[in-house]
Amino acid sequence: MTTTFITGANKSLGLETARRLVETGHTVLIGARDPERGRAAAGSLGARFVQIDVTDDASAAAGSLGARFVQIDVTDDASVEAAAADVAAHEGMIDVLVNNAGVLGRVGPVEEYTAADVSAVLDVNVIGIVRVTHAFLPLLRKSSNPVIVNVSSGMGSFGLTQDPARIESQYALPLYSASKAAVTMLTAQYAREMKDVKVNAADPGQTATDFTGGLGHSIAAGAESIVTLATIGPDGPTGQFIDRFGNLPW
Ligand SMILES: NC(=O)c1ccc[n+]([C@@H]2O[C@H](COP(=O)([O-])OP(=O)(O)OC[C@H]3O[C@@H](n4cnc5c(N)ncnc54)[C@H](OP(=O)(O)O)[C@@H]3O)[C@@H](O)[C@H]2O)c1
Image (tube, rainbow, N blue to C red; front, side, top):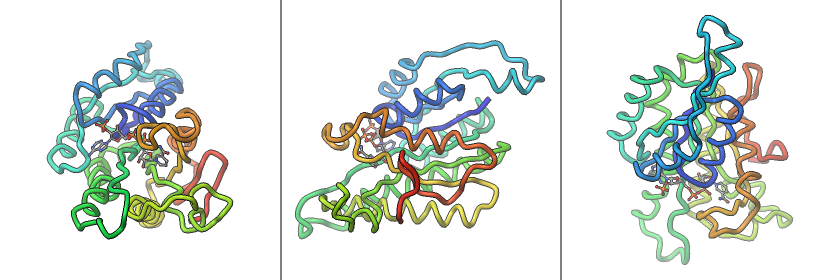
């Protein structure tokens, strides 16, 4: 059985990833900051109870126990620690961590940006990943195939934002883009530093969620690259940055 923890899983890309992973047999822990939204999301995925013989690898691998809500605000040390303690008490370990929670942050004229605006977007998108990874690594390292998926963005890619053929070159989102560039490089450097954990970054591409005000491809298409990286085997890649079509330039 594979146990996967996803932050920001109460809606959009996080929830779709959870749905797809439950379908493939993962037990998914729905990380959400709001209990009502988190419980509703976990409830919407249902609980699929299957008979598992824990002494039989094939039987154990076959069973998903569905989804369970775990409260987590990725900007709050105490909340993140409490979430890890909750998972330690109930599941005892995880195999896959999907750092999906993210915010767009302030947009508009650069001259209006303040230090607080920068801190706010970095706190969720970058420091949140460091905070959650720090708290969950001991649980991940109990897995025989520990995997981290950081949800980044093509908006954080120098290559894509400079390519006139790409939609990423048509937007100016300085704070968000800087935060996602940091996420992608954090991924590459964590992968280099941790030989025992596979760490990769996914770009959903412009996806029609609340985030984009409904612009972009379907949420199912957006979740593809996240699901691909969340389901890699022991021989899977590390330190990669992909979208649903393959590798991306940094
Ligand atoms: N949509 C796109 O076009 C696109 C493209 C590339 C990358 N991405 C990335 O994909 C990820 C998901 O985006 P989305 O489009 O699904 O966005 P979304 O619809 O706005 O969902 C974002 C999720 O993050 C959660 N979240 C925000 N701040 C949080 C915090 N402090 N603690 C815990 N959870 C928090 C939200 O919870 P609440 O419901 O409580 O607010 C929500 O569940 C983000 O990292 C985003 O940058 C999106």
